[in-house]
Image (tube, rainbow, N blue to C red; front, side, top):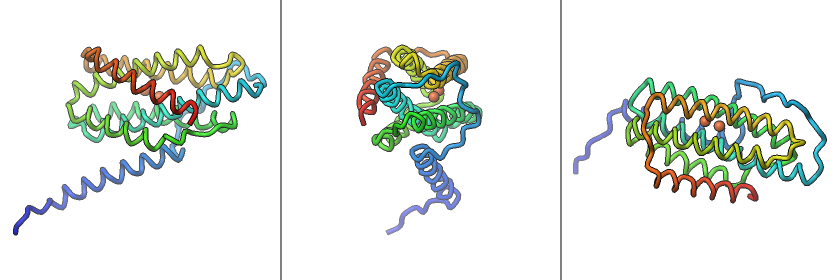
Amino acid sequence: MTGEQPEPATLVAFLDICLTVIDGGLRACAGAGHPQRPPPAAVEAEELDDRARRRSGALMRVNHCGEICAQALYQGQALTTGDAETRRFLMAAAQDEEDHLGWCRQRLRELGSRPSLLDPAFYAASLLLGAIAGSCGDRTSLAFLEATEDQVRQHLDRHLRRLPEADGKSRAVVQAMRDDEERHRRDAARRQPTVFPPMVKRLMGVAARAMTATTYRL
Ligand SMILES: [Fe+2]
Ligand SMILES: [Fe+2]
């Protein structure tokens, strides 16, 4: 029986990708990333009562999980794109997401809250989704990115309405994230002006609501 042996260079590249993915997943879920920007300064820092603290903690846990998903989506797309320039664009945006992840993690600690138990599962699902989008080619991948960032921006607008007024620190973090996500959306749209099918957008909305509802409590 004869079988074709993989080229050593192909095998090395495959192992390199596997290690990159595993390392990225572990770092994202363990909070071992390296934010390059400090957390946004809050306009005011009031003492929060227990109810407000719990509410902020739950909302920031949702946002922390959302940033873990963003890491995985960008990684999946970057690993499967065939275009070096698109990969550079994706990795630059992924650095912003790493900042967001670090800011959310720090704010969770300050609020006495914790990350979601479901983070590893959502990381794996998002990585797969990103890899599928990337495998469909840059046109689809960037349209997917634009649609995702649009939904994330809308989600963060809703959280700005739900966060306690007194929690200036969390509000400053969410506002800065919201502005970055809108910039990512605009940059993706500029690169690839494509309208994503409304049906797919609705499905993405359902998946996002499932993540939001579960991680708020878990
Ligand atoms: Fe983000
Ligand atoms: Fe983003």
